[in-house]
Length: 265
Image (cartoon, rainbow, N blue to C red):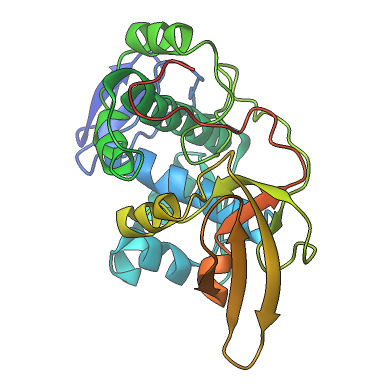
């Protein structure tokens, strides 16, 4: 039985009036969480990935999610009570195994939906992120499995982000460099773009810098804080240091080429 302030979600968990699931039976399929909980867990996972797995400061989460720091603190306490995160006040938060399983399942839904919208529906890669933010919370497991099958069991989304397997595993990939750290003059493949703002993605597409495209970094200027990039077959361009950090490259393009809208490649 749930308490007077909660409603039953299944035989092993309760959902309170604040939308937080208080049970501990968080399986990979059929996640028992509201969209808000899923958004928090997914963002914690992404921040952990960027920070190398260390504690994620609440302020960083507040900025990424666009909410007040106090809101984050309240949510972290609730998620900790639910067994989804380990929370250290004033230090930060990290996912527990249960939280990680749920977060990777949300990421799987999000990234499969993005790729489906690009390759099957024909939407532009610059707009599918926001659509997936909505659809990831409502897509059924049956539909998700069918989408995965139609796409040929892909391992990357349109932005080069790895798609977790149904078991929650992240496909392995060789270490990638950014345009700030790669070797000058070496012909490299764009492998991943970590900034999914539509205007940034359109800029990259205009200059032939989508995942699978090839380029050389010609120079870096510390004084102007710019990187000179020469796309293969395109005109050179200058990117600021922050933008250059958001484009990941590698020596191999295997599996990275993303089909243009309408293509089934």
